[in-house]
Image (cartoon, rainbow, N blue to C red; front, top):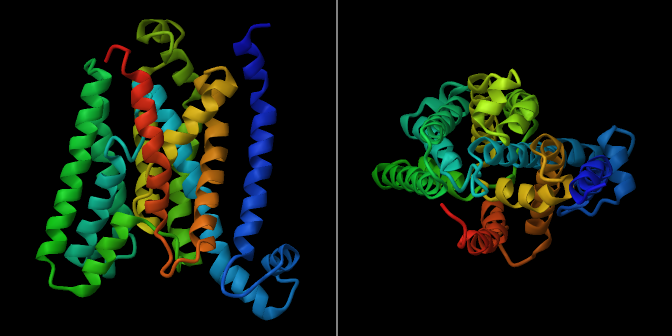
Length: 337
């Protein structure tokens, strides 16, 4: 048995281990806050079987935050694995290639225009639209044979343009509330999220994640080349559309409630890919579970570090992901772009 085959067999226990880690981090997240709650009390409060005050704290304050970290982290890990398989580019990730920033721009437009305060679905619609436009542009470039460096530069340009337009809207806005909300999208946070926010994002994220999960066979075929994939009966247009729409739904909905959280989709797939034999189809589930675990851990970290005001989640993930990104670039520096 080859090393790749052994690693493929390791995918199931790896997923089981990551699922157990997610569960442990989820329970730990429920215990953290101004009121000390034991794991037993947190689990009891989750099901309404403990003190009413504890149940209220767990269900109304801590459950939405932990659940959003779980679903958004899972969707970002899954989106990163799918994008890297689609573009055959190890640097592809929603934050790095500008998709997250474009989604934030779409959300900011709805805040700046006032639509977000009038129409409940304007904010996620704006985030989804921004993410879809950015993903479509990059997909069109990839379909025309653009290399890794070209895709990366276009992604950086999309992200830079989006940040510039967000900054312009902040500069022109005379509404302090709008400025503070826009600043939130730039830094990302799960603080003070509610069950309503969870209900707003979860349907889009679940739908997008399902589309990405069903793209595994197509991603596997793409590793053999487009001609070989077609000969196997794989519809490349359908696979690409699935991933574009799936990434847009996941990233747009996540940004709509949590702001920009970067690098999760870059770090997790690269750490886990060797453990599943570099098989794209076997990477999707571990990447989702790993992304959920990473974002839960990062959100726990921002609450555990007592240095005054709570750190923003997006800042922490960037501090984790940026050194990893530099290390990845150095690893690829001798390869052809």
